[in-house]
Image (tube, rainbow, N blue to C red; front, side, top):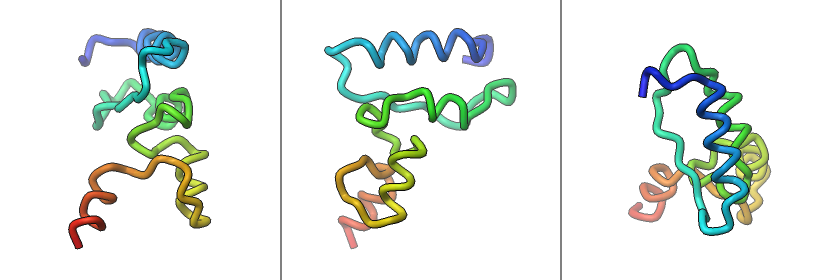
Length: 81
């Protein structure tokens, strides 16, 4: 929602990160211009980052480690191919 502040979004992510019932967080992009996407993606715990955008998961993907999340759309395309 465009009225959401970056602080509010970070607080929500912190609550979801701490919630054991929540196993994955997907950030709906594009984010409004007043929200820094890099800050938001880095705030999601790597083990809950189903987008695969956290710097840890991106790094794992680049070096060929398969234990992190990868972006679901590209992974689906690769699977279909």
